[in-house]
Length: 250
Image (tube, rainbow, N blue to C red; front, top):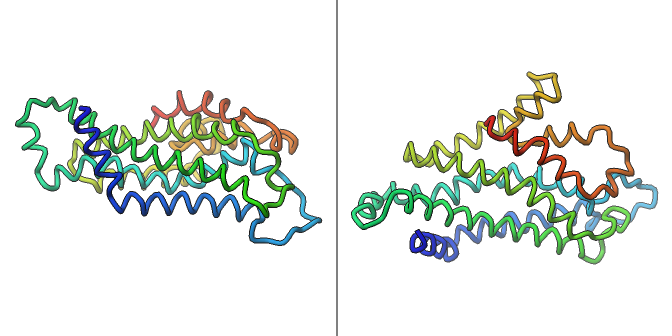
């Protein structure tokens, strides 16, 4: 397993496609944060701040927006790691060596998932750096809090990515077709967007939403402006009440 993991991870870290994904998402996250914080706009003294960008609430909303694109990295990184062997019929040769299917699949999955985690880590770092850029409007970003940047990643992004990656990887392994994994991601996004038009019960909507964004909206809908600005631990409530019990519904 370790040999496959190291080989596949090294393959990704020397693959130009990985760095295209990396530049796109990290650069996009920095531009998103900086643009929202007024880096490209003149200061407007009459503008009222509803929520600081450095608050856990607003950072979770930023990750929700980024997450729709990050989902497509699951088949692109985790899925391709396995599918490339099926496409070139290499898996049959590998199984002729003293290697179990369990070791083979675990090595493949963790290599692709580690490449994905590398991008997530650098996106987080990019958002932190973006929040410290000169020229941002201080009334929009608020004070810097490291824990506010880490909470959405640990309690929203990573649990979702782990479950959805396992789910997608399993279907690609079973079907030996990368497009099945891509189709699953598209279907999950469509379900998440269609559910509000078919379900009026906010609790049921929160539990059935495969991406968790409606649970977040439901849990914070009655918050005051003050809570949006300073509340540091909202994503822990978000994760505890939806993602852990709710994602198995996928």
